[in-house]
Length: 254
Image 1: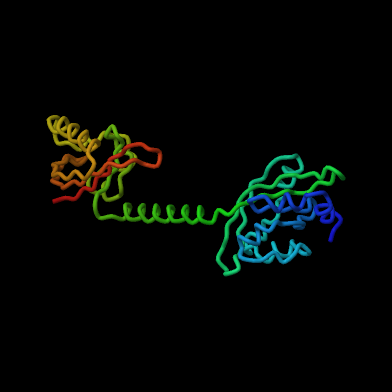
Image 2: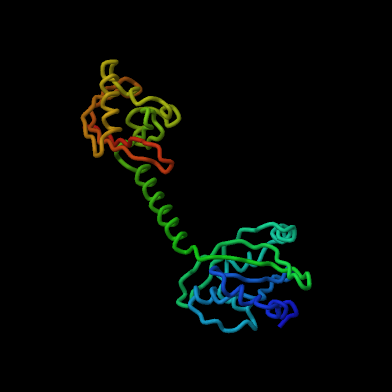
């Protein structure tokens, strides 16, 4: 046991205090990065009983994912930030006893023992595995949605609450003859065959924004070259991630 490790356990109530913290807490040697102490919460989260504090560094190394070992414990830049009294965000992945992966995140900072003035790295991390899984699921679903929209054989457009195009898929551009950059920002009535239709479309658009369900309709639309197309349109309103109301349209030529 190193002199610094002995100091951790020698102070009155120091170990008890670290053990009582609800998050995983560890201490690292400022120079070598050796793990000097980790509380029982670490072992509980990973399905292990506390096997003692004689070689805590080996436990961290044993349970860290190989890719994360290269980043553990900190870079030279991180060390400088810690030495200056700053906080360094960290995210580590560990193998659970049943070999599933547990992701923990938190921060490292400097800790000075009041008696000797010796400094080390104090780390606090917590289990964010469920959060990471939800983020991955949302990202996967979003990517699948984006792929479906981009490769759809149906023309799809998204309008803001004022009726301006914020997104169209390639099929829309192919049918109506507008390049993506040309149509984005334009009002959807640019596709109207005449002025009378523009007024009617604006009234219908307001109804779609206020409706709770699906609005189906049949429309005559003009392409960029002036060709008239009869299409069926299915319209939904939705609120995006920023809470802004939008209308998504699915357009199919009859």
